[in-house]
Amino acid sequence: MDIRFTDEQEMMRKMVRDFAEKEIAPFVEKMEQGEFPREVLKKMGGLGLMGIPVPEEYGGAEMDFMSYIIAINEISRVSAAVGVILSVHTSVGTNPILYFGNEEQKQKYVPKMAAGEWLGAFCLTEPGAGSDAGNLKSKAVLDGDSYVLNGAKVFITNGGEADVYIVFARTAGDAISAFIVEKGTKGLIIGKDEKKMGLHGSRTVQLTFEDMRIPRENLLGIEGEGFKIAMSNLDAGRIGIGAQALGIAEAALSAAIDYAKERHQFGKPIAAQQGIAFKLADMATAVEAARLLVYRAASLRSAGLKCGQEASMAKLLASKTAVETATEAIQVFGGYGYTEDYPVERYFRDAKVTEIYEGTSEIQRHVIARQL
Ligand code: CAA
Image (cartoon, rainbow, N blue to C red):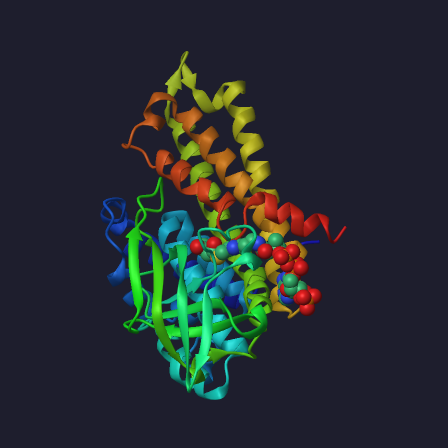
């Protein structure tokens, strides 16, 4: 199977690559100091990048899922932090409303999210429900024309910065339901901002809900169907994180190749020493394999076909490749790679979480294995 991109998709890649190099790269240092890339996201909104697969009638760019994955891939080569912000905002922030919302909800939220005016977040994980997401304990009790929600969430990407939160909680009969919660809702408490190993430009917070009243009309989809909403959107989300991991791996490979050609030892470039040359060959082969799985899963999703297993395979391999390629890139750089003077240590720190969030590698194997 050969994956070929259309002219439109190639144009998207070029446009996003130029944008990332001109507008995101200069901001990376500030993000490393913990600054949230508000200005960058605003510019991305202006270019239609915050709503790539969203239909025009809801203010989106109405491009295919493949183009969206290309954008995450390209952005993540420069900044994995901006990559995850975009992936969470679109795959699990905006898409649940687009696919499961009623017309009123779609009209109210999606155009602002697609324009990048409102940022989305996805609130599934709890202190006692990480991999076992179905064991969540947050509870929403219907009281008159609103639900009263109590509970806690952890590791919420975009939390605190987001305007729209997709929140999962138990409702009558212990079934899980999904809700749209707006920033500023009374009882929505933004907690600890996690100090992370990497992705310093992205925000990851704890949330607490204290007698938080959600208007009944903010129930997303049918009451009790929340877990399916979470899982089906995670299928696409995992391709996005696969593309993010691929971007990190590509950046690490490219830095290692450039450095290996410049750095001389024993009278010749280290790229010409077999120990390094073979390492680069293995890295390039792994990156190509990850690229094929990510774009294969994206092409299935673009065609509206089932892609759960392929999405998990893509995320599993791409995240492993990101970690291994970044590790090997540091090895190629030697002592310099261990310093903050070169970007490979950032790739290494950013890569690790791709094996953890949106389902750990163990959960991806579980999803793949049970379909074999
Ligand atoms: N699409 C639609 N429905 C699905 C589905 C899918 N992909 N997967 C499962 N379902 C449905 C099932 O059909 C089932 O429905 P019925 O009860 O009607 O049969 C229901 O959901 C329950 O499914 P399971 O029995 O498979 O549920 P489970 O408890 O065994 O859990 C799991 C499955 C795969 C382990 C799941 O808990 C899981 O994915 N865990 C990982 C959690 C995760 O990925 N968290 C990510 C958080 S978001 C994030 O990380 C964002 C970020 O910051 C970057």
